[in-house]
Amino acid sequence: MAPPALQWVVLVAFIVLTVSGNVLVCLAVSTSRRLHRISNCFVVSLAVTDLLLGLLVLPLTATLELRSGHWPLGGILCNIYISMDVMLCTASIFTLLAISVDRYLAISDPLCYLRRVTPRRVIAALVTIWTTSLAVSFGPIHLGWNTKDFSVQNLDWSIGDEGEENRPCRFEWNNNYVLLDAFGTFYLPLLVMCGMYHRIFCVAREQVRRIRAATPSFARSASAAATAREHKATVTLAAVLGAFVICWFPYFTYFTCMGMWAETDPPKLIHSVVLWLGYFNSALNPILYPALNRDFRRAYGQLLCCRGTRHRAPMSMRMFKPKQTSCSNAQRTQHIQTKPAEWLCLTQQEINGNTISD
Image (cartoon, rainbow, N blue to C red; front, side, top):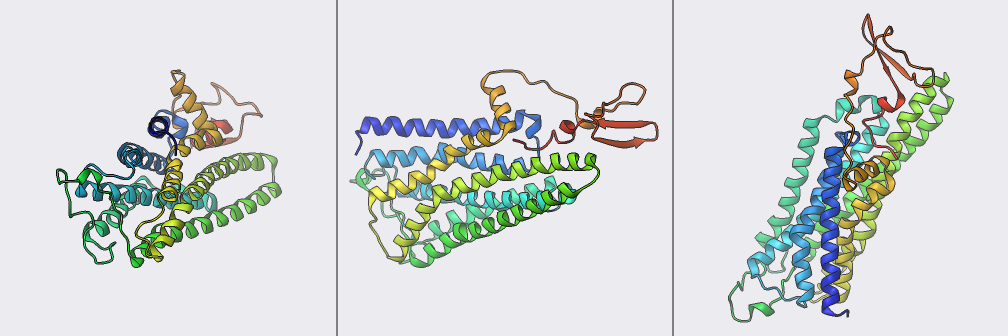
């Protein structure tokens, strides 16, 4: 075991990295026009989940690590702490599931995407995600559905009781709870997400084949650029899903095995390793976004270097009449007639300026 001072430094640094990184993600999406996209609401929701984990759960988990598992805050707060941990993990999984559905709609039927994925539906999806996560976490634990005798755990002691500082914060479970929780909030959503991304890449490959066969070259270049940007966004978010699986799969496998074997005192070292590996995912996501995505790199650079952004007028405002200006053949990619006497002349960057790119 590492010295307590070293453990303290490492845990504090990890918490600071998690909190600051996810704050940076939220600021990047809110300040960068290129990231003002309805699907990025799910990215912000995922960042908020990780941010809350860093603020509310990780400090308490670090306290348990430094105190050798002894909980100093009483049984009621112990149950609230465990419930928050379960809720935020569940919200992350369901948000990733929503992201996979969003990517499937964007890739499989891009022309109908904006009609299907409206702000109202995105808000409804986020409300459903957080409400469900709250219900499946706080409900069973505070009603005693997770224990073998169906009594609420950790209510036999409180702050101020004799010897309470040496009491552990126990997370009890029975077979039914373990199976329902693990398969309902992890394995089943994971299977759905893997199936969705497999279908996405099949559709993407078919689109590339069709684009290569398209004529004329103007249509091929415009469609290829727009489709490539969506594909890169999908690869970025698929990498986020992959990181989540790598980080959390060991914990849920361990959790399932311990529950099915009715293990009441699991090995502390193994438990700490798989748990903090899962927590590591919350610090990893803010690193994955700029590593795989050019728009996030630009937004991070503007925020960290304190450089002001040049705000451009919305695309709908950049209208030019033929007498005032013209586009070169290299820049002209699309003409949209808005009135008999007026035309929009948009570059390819302007057409796709509202999407995620690499």
